[in-house]
Image (cartoon, rainbow, N blue to C red):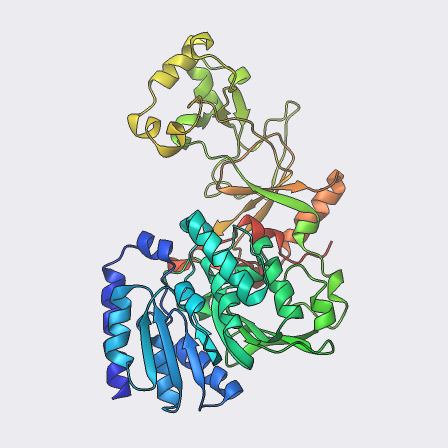
Length: 482
């Protein structure tokens, strides 16, 4: 009977997914938990709290976790909350019973009215980014989270962060929560208050970081981890356990003393920990700031070879060197001529200062601007840029990173830039926090290229189709020996 219900649930989940666009599901953070993963997380949770317990699922969807729990024990008393009516109806039809109550409500509305506390929580909360939350929602969630946990979150926090803190507040003393959440929570700045909460207010039993290829979230935009939290004041002599790879058979397990963990601002890349003071672990952000290259709004219009611009009658006065696409540029460094132009490429950006008046521009430039294709001219970036033809200020980074790739052998490349060339937003530029000599920059670039591929891949995120990507914040949290 249980297997039949689970098969029905999976079919209905597939129907729901196929009837909602990727954009809709991204906005609402709806990424269903694969049943095999739900099963191992549920089994681990019940091994910590027992099988005759009360469990809250605050974002139950169609009920993957509920199904997994019921397949292990029929003694569990489950409360599932789901905001989406369609998902709620499926969960209600499949799982509702005397010991399993499914509620159609926003979790935070439910939490604000519910006084019951639970032995356990299991959840894959919505991954909605902060920009998908209204200001009124953020205010409400922040106030409720502060009430339940005493933590004030930044306006940049995603919805999952509010879930974790509010949900933990609904646990009984010594209760356990298992949270399937984005790994970035343990590296990004908005997660700092949560990391402090986890080391000072509760006992952090385990954080498991999945390798991207081991977690079959085909459509999620982030790599995930499981945080297992016990609602009990920590023993200052205790350890936090970090595991990596497969949940049941991790390829790496490390134990870090809580007193050392509290010294760290980022927890996502600690695989190299070997017992030394972790405050000595250095990350790339200690040395550099990362910034995306420019978004022109139409590369084919604003970027041509230097020779093409000259043929159009546009002189170097109006041009700025720019790196070619990483798809076509594979060299480890960019050298410079005496004027700052790269010797390996003559790609140039039309760089019209913002202060330039259209009527005062050379005829050759005005003619080029007048010939701008309608599709580019009416694009989002150009419509919101004043004047539309001015890229704005451009800079040159001494090291640039190709932060998107499908390769496992060389997922991301670090290129030493000795020229004045700027770059498009297909690159990340690394800018030193303090002045560095050429020799120091050379050594740093070499060290970056020597980071093992698996560290780079695990530090970023993986999309469907094997596309790997490093966001600036993820790049800055990479461990580095320099």
